[in-house]
Length: 180
Ligand SMILES: [Fe+2]
Figure (cartoon, rainbow, N blue to C red):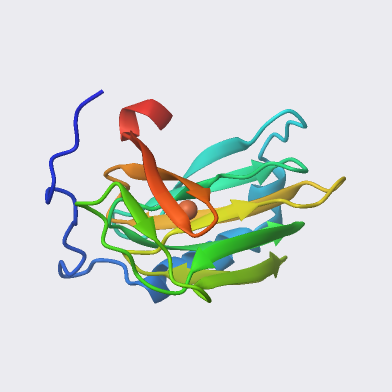
């Protein structure tokens, strides 16, 4: 696995014609409302499933199936901004109300009151900025969830974090080769 170089990651998102957060959210909502597309995703009770979509511009987009109890753990998006929209079921997002620096730290103590929780059900979505840190989970005991996610620029990497109380600790950096 390559070693991340401090200061190397934030990626310009201001290129002409680059899809904005609003563009990505509009795409995610449209795709999530496409019943034929959504029903074409195979679902697996044992784990998440995914299908690559053609996002707007040169964005990266995915249709994802979440069996009951599945989730992502805390992560960022390597400096990309993005959006997600739920097609079916309910996803719970835990996020941090402050943008975090993406590079140059291994552990951060989070301020009290920084946590946010939102539940997104069919037709609902949200966009997020380049420094968004969150975890997404299908908390249902019996119902699958399906959602659409779009990122721009395409994810250069993802940082995965462990959390203990108010301490967020960098645990792993994942590269696109690992989830292609
Ligand atoms: Fe995410």
